[in-house]
Length: 64
Ligand SMILES: [Zn+2]
Image (cartoon, rainbow, N blue to C red; front, side):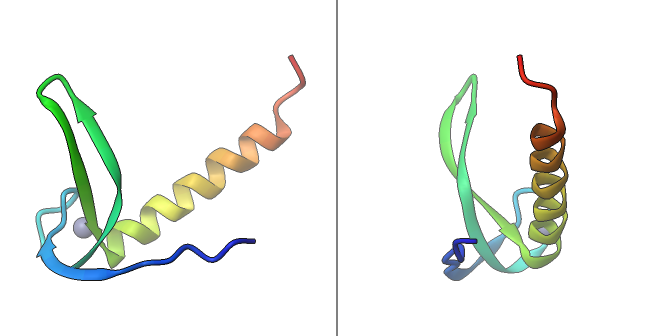
């Protein structure tokens, strides 16, 4: 499994508004444009759990 390289910077979490070390998690696109999105450790753990669950469901999906 490839190790995701994380670079922590000081900033505000886009998911929970907490100040602190945050890491870039990807671009977010809205009707107003695209921005880099940052998240704190806690939110990243939630995201990782969600991604894991999502990928597991994809793996178990019947072939189309
Ligand atoms: Zn957060």
